[in-house]
Image 1 (cartoon, one colour):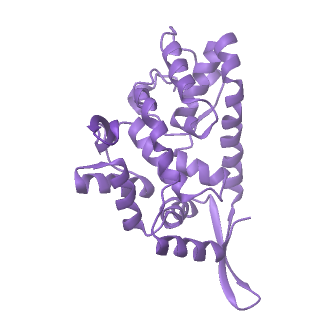
Image 2 (spheres, one colour):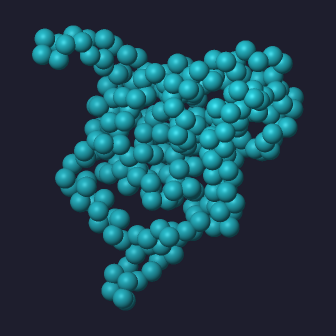
Image 3 (cartoon, rainbow, N blue to C red):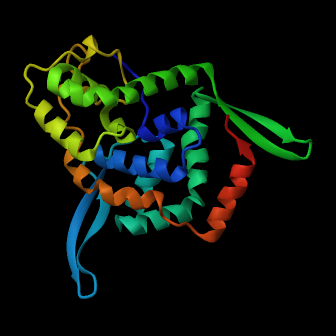
Length: 271
């Protein structure tokens, strides 16, 4: 089966070019944790004023294997540089390093996709005075966008398949992988579905339903026909803690960072 070799952040910018850099940081971090490239530890603490609370610590995972893509690499290197970071420290340190979330989006997510032929950039002039960049999907990018949207839209059928066609449900989760974070499927449902589907034996033939994966599937987890044998390369148990990651898209950057982001937005156009 074909693999589109995309991360959730790359898929997001292809189907929704105006999505925020904060969201791309969030989904990249969650993806790296699910794939065990990074590790998450929850430390329960008590404070006289706050009462009981949890502290989220991020460190190197057991499957931290290179190479990583640029938007993954900068997150990995940040953790390796500091050994471990609390979630809020991680966000603050990353924003200082990259300048602003839109810099992360443009430089680390979109620019490599230009090199791969998914996006194209044209330099334009506004009333012959102000230069700006216009980004658009190439023909290949539009084809990939169609494939991604087709799979993401199928999420609305997942509950039905869980009742009527477990083979189709498992095939769907197989080709989607951690991209399910981009859908509206509730995290509690994802855990429940994964638990139920892990007991299906024999494994359903994914290729009977789909011809491509959105992501790169670890070779050891595929059978001779290219079907996924196991979801064990994803640490689904971490989904319990991902509600805390909503702060990543609400985090305030420095005033200067926001000013830079606004200026950059005003100087580029994405149709």
